[in-house]
Image (tube, rainbow, N blue to C red; front, side, top):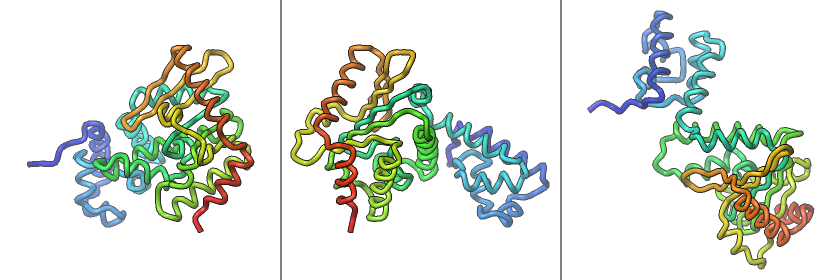
Length: 269
């Protein structure tokens, strides 16, 4: 039985084959020039395997498409891995003036390093292929870059100390993630509040992961997150519930300066 085609990548595969044949090159000739085997290139052309960005970058140069192939790859990746709720969250965050985030068990997504994010996605999606995980991480990286540009939404986060102390990943990943939090907080891109051990965090645990997205010209929204996706909340009473929850959690937390000091002390030896 042949390998199953990936519908989102069929047109992209046809374009790869067209570019190769119009260049007068065989699968083996292209493979000989690049770090891709003829067999893998054949799978990409037949859309039985989703391509990685690095591979598409090499093919873009080999076929002299001046970035067009990479842009097409980005478009297909977004279509394949970017559900409607994700686009709506992106649009809301792009128009926001303030973003308040909380996660009871992980570093919030907008504050994750690439290595930490890869660890989270890999643990959370054990059945996904490497290509699918790479595509998800590509979208997450773009979102983080947009949120952390100077002048973009004022960003505040509340994180339990347990999340800091039990940070996912190896020692290098943990050190990089904690350094990243400190750097963001010290550069005034983030107001960070850590809820210390001994403070009851059951309210935050029950509420789960959520964000409050505020604007200058409209009522705020809330966003709730789960392992399988997320949901934008626009009913004013429900949104106000999340605003109040964030205020309660923030009130239990250390000051930003003390939170930074706690994270420094939590760094792996």
